[in-house]
Amino acid sequence: MSTIAIVGAGPGLGRATAHRFGREGYSVALISRTQANVELLAAGLAAEGIAARGYTANVRDPEALRAALDAAVADLGPIEILQYSPVPANDFMKPVLETTAEDLVGPVEQSVYGPVAAVQHLLPGLRELGCGTILFINGSSAVFPNGNVTGTSVAFAGESAYARMIHHALAPEGIHVAQLIIPRGIGGGEPDHEPDALAERIFSLHRDRGRFRSFVGEESA
Image (tube, rainbow, N blue to C red; front, side, top):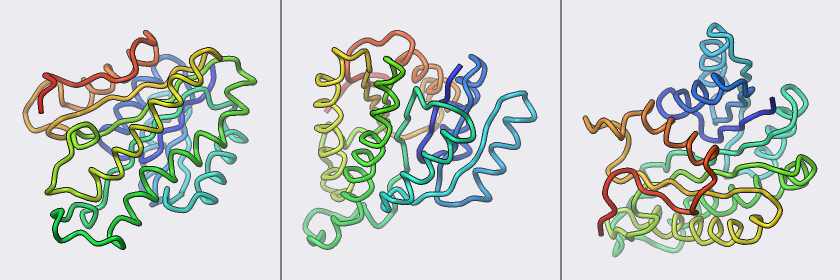
C-alpha cells in the first residue's frame, strides 16, 4: 500500500483522515508548520499500528513544501493521495472594503501557490503509479463568496478553479481530483460535520471516484 500526504494536518480533521486511511493500510505523511504537533499526531497513530511520520512546511513556502513531500516519499514510499487542507489564518478574513491588495498575498500564497506547487511536484510520481487522488477541502466561501472573509473567498475561488481544471485534465490518466465543501466549519454539533464523519466522506471521495465537487449537508447560497 502507498502513502497519503495530508497538507495542513491537525488534531481534528487531519488526525481523523489519517486514522481512516491508515485503517486501510496506507502510510500517512502529516505536514504542518509545527514539527512538534505533527510528531505528536504521528506518535498517536503509530501507537494504533499506523505507519505515520510528521514533516514541517509552511505551505506559503513552495520549496519547503516540496522538500517535505520529498522526505515523505523517501521515508514512507510513493504518495498516491494528496489531501490539501490547511486552515486559513485569521488575518485572511477581513471585510471586503477593508481588504487591500497586500492583504491578498498570504491567502493566494496558501490557497493557490501552495496546491499548485504540491500537485506539480507529485504529478510525475502519480503518473508513474498510473493512479492517484488529489483532494481539496474547503469552506463554503470557495463557492459562495463572503465579503466578511475576503482573502479566503478570493483565494479559495482560485484554488477551486485550479482544482476543477486539473480534475478534467487528469481524469484520462486515471488520477482523480475531488473537492469537498464543508459549510459552517468542522464540528459545531452537526453529526455530519464531525471529524470522523468528514474523514469517512473524504475516504469515499477517494474510493468511489465520482464527481468533482461535493458538499457536506445541504448546498445553499
